[in-house]
Amino acid sequence: MISKNLLALGPNIIGATGGSGTRVVARIVRVAGMFIGENLNVSEDAIEFGAYSDRWINRFKTRRENHASPVTEAAMIADFAEVLEKHCKPLQTHPRPWGWKEPRSIYLLPFLDSQFPNGKFLHMVRDGRDMAFSQNQNQLKKHGKTLLNWKERLIPKPVRSITLWSRINLLAADYGEGRMGDRYLRIRFEDLCTDPAPVIRRMFLFFGLSGDAEQIAGLEVNRPATIGRWQDKNPQTVARINQAAAAALRRFGYVI
Image 1 (cartoon, rainbow, N blue to C red):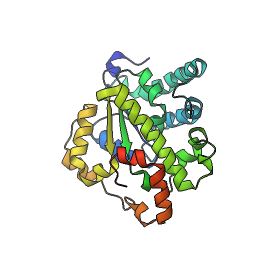
Image 2: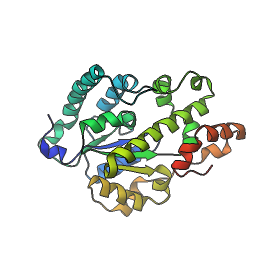
Image 3: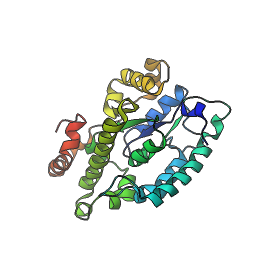
């Protein structure tokens, strides 16, 4: 059972499709004093929540509905309570702002919101065309069969990748804007890399953190060479991914 004191300080959840830059966000909020767990992998993901995602996303998320059956939800809640208690154990004696970074939390956003009516969700977005040509296609491998229909599963991998990117990010944006209000914040990875200090200030304000944004930006934010990698790819493939994700690209401010 999470105490009322802790519930007043979190959770602050960081989610995205894979490779969207959540690792640097996790480092930034840790520097500012936010607890994101002690059992983390090299990408700063909370390992227990990652295992939870493995167990439940494909059962929770289908093409036709955005919620679980009553039986599935009861099991999800019981499992989640155990994961959460283990994650928060170090905070019992030293409460502070807390949450976790597990990119695939984006798939479970409605469920997580139902468990934490005051929780906050930071939605990281990166240009889906760069994502389509990324080596990191773990989410497509794990969840593509659940989120894509049989025709979509037959198209070339870059088009499949951006189709999944489009679907998941649009669902999260619709839910966050429509249901969460000021508990939802969306940030583009490219904006963080181009002008990091103002973006970091927005994150701190959102999560109730403080710190020297300029200094932290200098220490933690580096613009990767992979930004814009899609521009050197086969023009016909690029045209197909632009068409597949046109609505999402435009909504998130990417020029087609």
